[in-house]
Each structure stands twice: as C-alpha cells, then as structure tokens.
Length: 120
Image (cartoon, rainbow, N blue to C red; front, side):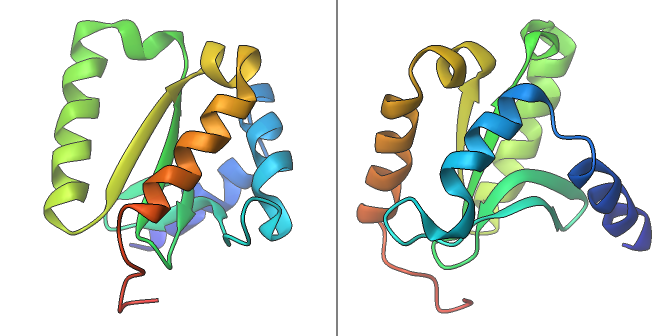
C-alpha cells in the first residue's frame, strides 16, 4: 500500500496536459459542488480523479489505452473497482480536449443516478 501512496504522490506532481485541463474544472468543488481528489490511491490502483462521496472514479485514457493488452488491463481494473462499489467513467484525451462541457455533464449525471456513498 505504501508503494501505491508514493506513486500517487509522484503522479500528482506530473499531471498530463489533459489531466490538468480536467483538474482545473474539477478542483475546489467547481463542478456541482462535488469534491474530487486527483491521483487518489484506491486498493492497488491510483485513480486519476475520485469523488469519495459518490464512489466515482474518472479515468482519462491516452493513446496507449487503444493497445489490446492495455484495454484488457483497463477492463480488469474497471471490473475490480465496480465489484467494490466504485463507478468508473472513462474518457479519452480527445473527449476532454475537444468536448470538456460534455465530459463534465456526464460526470454530474453519474452522480445524479446514484445516491451518495455511506463510506464518505
């Protein structure tokens, strides 16, 4: 677990340009009052963005995620998280860059379709 926490700390210092764009829209409860954490350690993974209140993970996928092996790992990761009550939303870099408003709308909709987590 310490390795995951250290990895998360390092990743917070090295956001990708696309992650930085989305973080600028999420930070400080700017989006519908939702509190997000960036590069949040969760089980054996580091989640790009995580809203504890709604157990919602938002993942930004770059070009490597097109690779069939990486896509299979992503699917396993999503299944693992969903089995533990985490809703996972995945967006491509292009979606964030070219249609940020729609990405943000879909994040808000995901929180409206499920009640807050008792874990928050």
